[in-house]
Length: 273
Image (tube, rainbow, N blue to C red):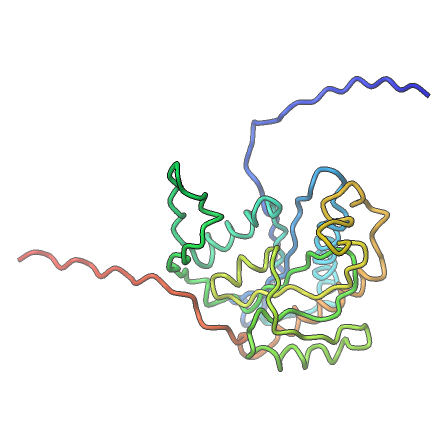
């Protein structure tokens, strides 16, 4: 068999911005406070990005559909964030957090003999908190493939452990039972956790997502629609909808870890007399 292909490609540079997709299910008496669920929309080029991370995006869209379909009336607003630029460094979620919750000054550009900023171990600059920082109850993320949710990483937030244990009781028949104090990284909950907000990633069955090293379907040409597990995605949507609803209905905000260093407010200079 002989195949002749004429490939024509072009770079479209009219708009080089990345975009986030954000939508709200409005709350009632605490609608100024927000519970967020999220995943990232972008993917790597070898495949179609089904497990990384169309799976997470589809689950989070289903979470909102479930709450809307059952006519839930959450006290707090439930907001979905589908992030762009995650694969380039959590760019979409970092920009959203910086704009709405807390910001740090950009690290200085490296000199010719210095390591680039993302490879240096400089302590993070102090935060400048924004008013909405106090209004985010929690952020829940999904970004480890198509497998069932088995539990949740606490990101070392010990105070939230008994809360999540109680919530898992209602979904333990679905196989979600585990809680660990451990941190996990590499995805968008870090944008929230790094500024002192309650940001969490769920524990999932790894399935084919990684093969024990770094690859599997993850970032490869195997990351296609046929790798998705419908029943597992449905289970994940129910578990996260449960967490989102409970966080939105809870009387108090979720407990938080101690804040990272916060920038001091500059005192106005007294007028000269």
